[in-house]
Figure 1 (tube, helix red, strand yellow):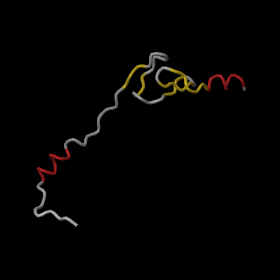
Figure 2 (figure 1 turned 60 degrees about the vertical axis):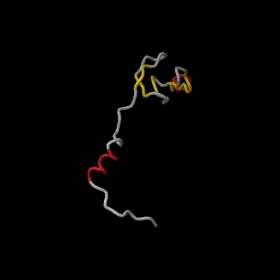
Figure 3 (figure 1 turned 30 degrees about the vertical axis):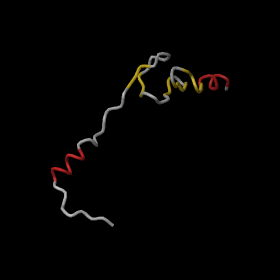
Length: 66
């Protein structure tokens, strides 16, 4: 197994770790429901599951039938 000849300095270690930061997720407004949601994710709005502006699952109709 390979082992380093010298100890990694604190500066070099910290330089490498600067890129590992949490970023805020991108948000968009849905054209159909007008609700704010995370991009490239399905989201619920008023009992309906929307993805890319289309209704995927509609639980509102099932609730009215019962």
